[in-house]
Image 1 (cartoon, rainbow, N blue to C red):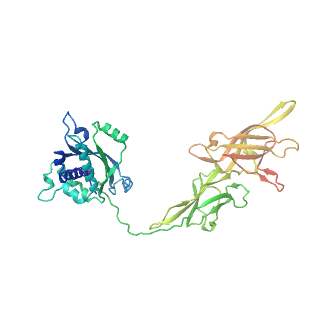
Image 2 (cartoon, rainbow, N blue to C red; image 1 turned 120 degrees about the vertical axis):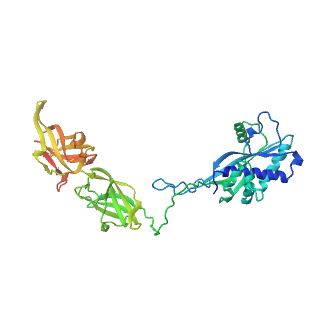
Image 3 (cartoon, rainbow, N blue to C red; image 1 turned 90 degrees about the horizontal axis):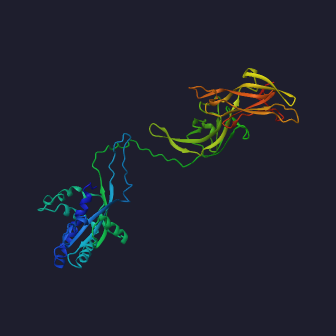
Length: 453
């Protein structure tokens, strides 16, 4: 690879090539003395100096090479130390401009200059060495500064040779370029020199070779969940303590787990088949798993390495099911769970109504989180025929009564008021997930109930 001197070295070699071509074609007999230079155009015709016959090669731009720009990106280890020195691939853009002291001289020079570059489309290694370090008895040491330093660019040793190709530019592009240069326009041809590879010489920390090589071949089998249901009956709700069945495909793997709302469950190997996974939501549930809509994902890992450790493998889509809360202080809620009870009466239209107020203590499974929305639902039990049953809903206080540093509770006290005396079916909603009512053989709801007579 070359180093940072390579850009200047390419310009120097091109200048030397053009100078040799002028001598070889004996252009001095055609247009007089010819000067070959590598200067910015605005420095050639400055300070009112008369125009001389000149062939000028000027590098006006360097751009990343598209083929090398993504090769060997900088690599560093976990400590941030460099592990290799990737090359910087550049394309150099040149303007070949001809100046003439008399008419037609600039056209003649430009024609010969373009012919020279056409006949030498590659900067050969020998041409580079000859231009930057002439052979004995003449050596590069006699070259004027900074040319005597360019032999250190190592341009002749880079893996790719530099190619010179014409570049088509529209009149508008050429006009804008010369306007930016702020010089009078002269006959010009554009060229690209590609590719120059610049590599840093900084010390790196190469990794040790791999002692034991192992190749792991894993068939692509993406698991997918179609639905999550109660194992006993697909139509039944899912509560804590219930067994669920995850149905889908490609579940069988050596290291398979189920992620429910960020909590990992590991089913027994015998409960996993390619089409389904059987998993029991044992009660009590793990901390942090609350009632509500739960996301389920099947995670498959593969054991690799020495010693073998689980590595990331395949992950299924995320499916959902509703985990229902369960009132555990039933089926008949004791009178002791009706706190701060207040009995009152109210007369309206000549009818006296007996009203009840207080707090109803509910024990829940799973626990209620501090930030969950808990609502008490009361429906009149065994309402008289032909009469609409009374129904009420009451929200739990903010935070559900959970005090720091606790995050959840199994007991929530929910205040109620102006409830007509009677017996009520009790339900609770936690983040939209509603508890289940018990039924008798006839399908009528019978519990849990609370007596507010």
